[in-house]
Length: 157
Image (cartoon, rainbow, N blue to C red; front, top):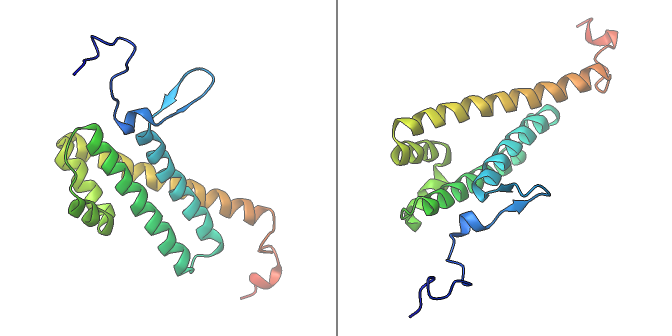
């Protein structure tokens, strides 16, 4: 059996969470973990902006909830892989079913008090993203007259 010292041209095995990345022209690399977290924030922003149009659409709410749970579970699986921890299939299923609570529990269990701070930081950041997306779309539609809210019939009621 040969080692990497005997064969210098052979690269050592890298974990999938580190090898899958996007590269831009400057050579900056974004890990899978970063892409999954960014996609969670994009999903929160999209769901909030979509909520301006269809605030009572249960199908869109369930679809966004399922996609959020899938992205968060994929993030937890990749994070456990990068920390070299075992994430059993039963725990994956439970994490998927109880996603927001289990994600917070996962971060606290793997990182201690620092994980509690990360949970609080991400909750605040997701609330900011959701409010900015919602109110931006709402006020753009309001001031462009899309809903005809300046019509006097709305003020007589």
